[in-house]
Length: 92
Image (cartoon, rainbow, N blue to C red; front, side):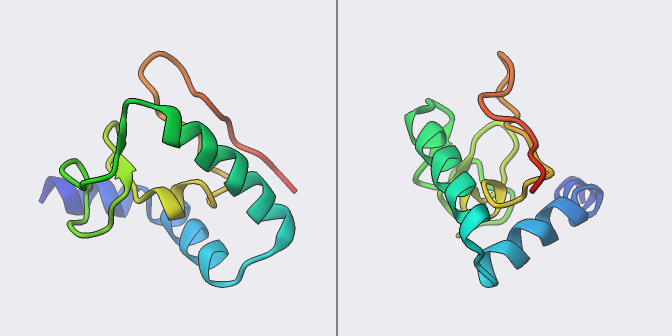
């Protein structure tokens, strides 16, 4: 139930990431590539999927449980790192 509430609360951000993953645009892909490089260096980058909100969607972020391929493409999202965001929201 908690998982469903988290997904519901963030449905707009998730949908943005999904749409941008399906319908790729160069400016967004440039941002996503930079964000992904930062995420891959982070100790919270979960390649196995033990902390993913949705099982089987790894790699994901251990902090928020989001699927990385969607998270980095959601320009309205920022990094949830507990020490402060490693990347922030952006607008095109």
